[in-house]
Amino acid sequence: MDYESLLQAGSMMGSGGLIVMDENACMVDMARFFLDFTRDESCGKCTPCRIGTKRMLEILDRITAGEGHEGDIDALLTLAHHIKSTSLCGLGQSAPNPVLSMLKQFRSEYEAHIHAKRCPAGVCQALLNFNIIPEKCRGCGLCARVCPTAAIKGKPKELYRIERQKCVKCGACLEKCPFGAVVRA
Ligand code: SF4
Ligand code: SF4
Ligand code: SF4
Image (cartoon, rainbow, N blue to C red; front, side, top):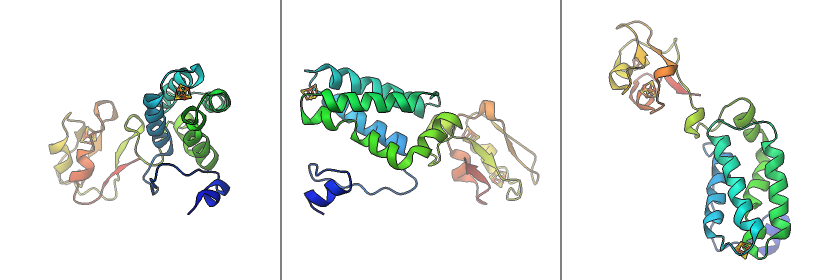
C-alpha cells in the first residue's frame, strides 16, 4: 500500500488509518459518520466547506431516518462537486470523497434507503422492522416477556406476532428468542 497505488484505486493516503468493513456496515451511515467529522473540523473560513458539508449532512441524516426522497442523490453529487472544486484547503476539497466513492460503489444501498425505505445492512434504526418467522416460532413466549412496549402478542405454544405500530425497534425480542425465529429486515 503506497501513495501511488491508493491514488490508482481512487483513494488517497490519509493520516494512517485503514478501516475494514463487512456487509454489516451501512454505506449511507458510514458516509454520514465521515461527513459529520469533516463538518466539525471545518474552520469555517470558506462558505462551500462551512455550509456545503452541513447541507450534505442534513440530506444524509434524512436518508438514514427514512425521509429520503427523489433528487437526494443528485443533490449530494452536485454539492459534493461544488465543495471539492471551490474549497480553499485539502479538508474541504476531500470532505465529500466518502460520499462520492460510496455512491460510486454502493449506489444501490442509497436507493434502497430512499425508495424502498430499507437499510440492507440493518443498521439504520428508523428503517428496521422486526418479524417473527412462523415456521420457526415455537410459541415459548419469551419475546413477549422482554418486549418493553407489549408489542408481541400470542398464546403459549402458538404463533406469536409483532404489532408494528407498538414496536420501538429495541431488538430485545431478537436477542431473546432461543429458536432464531425473530429476524430484522
Ligand atoms: S476548506 Fe479549509 S479553509 Fe475552507 S472552511 Fe474548510 S477547513 Fe477552512
Ligand atoms: S421467543 Fe421466539 S419462539 Fe418464543 S414465542 Fe417469541 S418468536 Fe416464538
Ligand atoms: S424490537 Fe423491541 S419493541 Fe419491537 S417487538 Fe421486539 S422487543 Fe418489542
